Image (cartoon, rainbow, N blue to C red; front, top):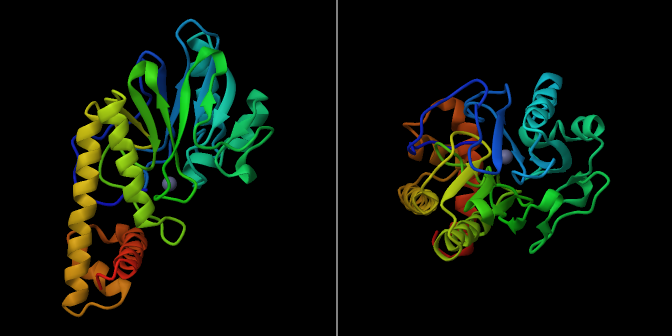
Length: 276
Ligand SMILES: [Zn+2]
C-alpha cells in the first residue's frame, strides 16, 4: 500500500522478463491500483544450480497469476519448494492457500495463523531451501507482522510493503505503528551499511539499485511528514481527517483513507513522545 511522494523508478506493466538478480525473478500480479502501484510483485528465489525455488508473496487469489508463477519457475528449471509471506495483506497473501494446494508446499509467515503446514517465522531464522540462504528480518511498522528477507548472496533484500519501488508506504494504524516502522527502517539501513545490501526487491514497483538511498529517503520522508503533522496540530487541526486534508492536500483523494491511517499512527507517535 502506498503513500505519496516520488521516488526514482518508472511505472511498468506486463510480465517481467529475465532475472532481477542472479537468484530472483519477478512475476507481476494483475492487480494494479493506486494502492498497489503496477500490481503485487511475486518473487521466485532460487540458487542458479538448484531445481528448488522459494516463492515470496503469491499475491491475490488469481488462478492465472498463480499458474504463471509456477510456469515461470518451471521454465527456469525449478519447482516450488516453499512459500513465504512478507505480511498478511490480501494483495500479498490471499492466494497463499490455493498456491500451497497447487504446489503442495508449506506456507510460512511471522503469524503462525497464516502458516500452512509449516512453522511461523522468527527473527534470526534462515531459510535454506535448495541451498539458498534467506535471512528473516522482522520489520514491523507497515503492519505488525511485516517481514523482510535478506538474500546475502545477491546483496539484496526483499522488502514486501516496508519499502516500495515507488512512492512511500502506509503505516497501517492501529496494526502498524510508527515507532516500530522507524526502528525497522534503521534496521534496514544497517543491512545496507554493514552487510553490503545494495538492491531492494520490493512488494510493489520496480527494483531499486540504491538500497541505502531508498532507506534514507524513507527516513527523511517520515521525518518531514511528522513535522508537517505536528505543525498542523499546533495550528488547530485536531482530528485525523482535518490533518489529512491539511498535510496531504496535494495527494490524490483516493489515497486519503490510507493517509488517514498513517496520520493516526503519527498522532499516536507524537502523543507518546510528548510532542503534542
Ligand atoms: Zn501491505
